[in-house]
Image 1: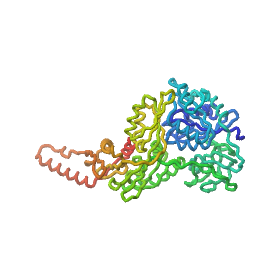
Image 2: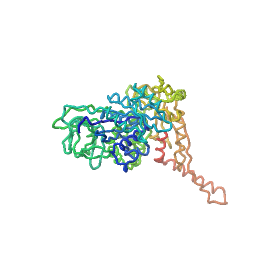
Image 3: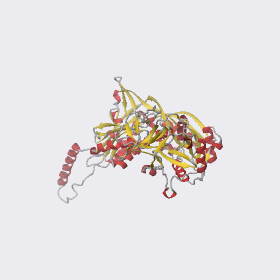
Image 4: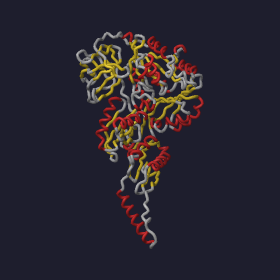
Length: 593
């Protein structure tokens, strides 16, 4: 096909602004999917995506419209999956900036817009959900005009629900998005922007072909790893994988490699012809994990299964990392790095559903740089490895640059809230007719994990949104808080706490465990320990059996003897008692933070 008739574009937006619904209407209008096969969220193939109503994985699809080939990559909207968005933007020439008419410009809108501009893409502003009874179309247009410095006539209005304006939008994409650049190079040069794994076909790489052509049976190679393979199949997404005879310059499609070893394929690599090698294309910067958590199988018999499962998930999600670790209480497991709390939740849920694993997940934490009194420096990824307070000279932790977009009326409410989370508030901008504000601030990454997002939504009735990006390392006044159940430290419950909130957090945590832990056969102490002492304690009462219930009449000494015998038995049991913490308790503690 002539490259001048190809248009590659993506859709970027804040979470829940209607990307998937608009994609559905595009597929419908272009006849890519027959009406009888149409369903909601066609491009969201994972069960979790449909349940939560969010996009987790980017999804490419090819459409034919008025003689043009339109290659769309639908992208996630949540900030935890911004790495997915950045990869999609490298494979296209244009992007639709989608804004919900009922919510207006949100924080993640600004983040994704910045990424698209840095990639040099043509931006087409689009307002969606214009059919909603509380849509603010004129106000949203004003916000977009201020944001993009454009004219109102450049902003398109559509409804993903009714299909209004979708045909006009498709015509606008053909007109505004440039075709792929022509190159003189004829040897194949394809950028790997994503890949998946099949038990039967091995690694399937998703590529954007920048030069040359690819056919089934071609001998190809990964530029970075040097591994050669034969293309067992090439094809496109319509939206299901559809084999084709060839992929040509400018197109987006897939290649079945047949490779089943991990570590060969990598996102950002270039696929070339080993007989006519071409330079590697600019790839992607490896994402840096911001949240860490340890994952252990509930039964150590499942450790090998967990290792295999993590390897398989890594093939479909290159943004998380893992390395083996050993805990005295929990056995062998893996220390995993994630891009955020939702990313952590999605990965653990996929491990349970797709691989049928019962897991214990420790409380999430961040990375600390700890300087000891002997002047050595350690990087701490796990709270239970954090040194005792007496051996620590200084601690540094990551801060992030963040922005909250909120209606003007909530700015006063958010000021003390941000102060309570140790934030440093900077400039406050007003836009959209001055009825919306953007608050710039710096905050410890640790504080974003302390119920920040839920509290923010609660304080602003769900109207506020937040985006953040990595910042610098700063000094931190934090200590390790250990939880002891029955005089035994439970590493999964250890956390690193700000010193100023130590007592409050300790009291809250022991109360929570008192509610969650089931009663045992013996009395069990639940204690919080920090700074070398116990700072909070509760007692979990034991089950009590009435050993004298069957007695009637007779001397009181008969009852006394039985009670004394029971007392000795309880004492002996306490000496040999093991702490039994059910799997559900670990899950509830993780979810409640």
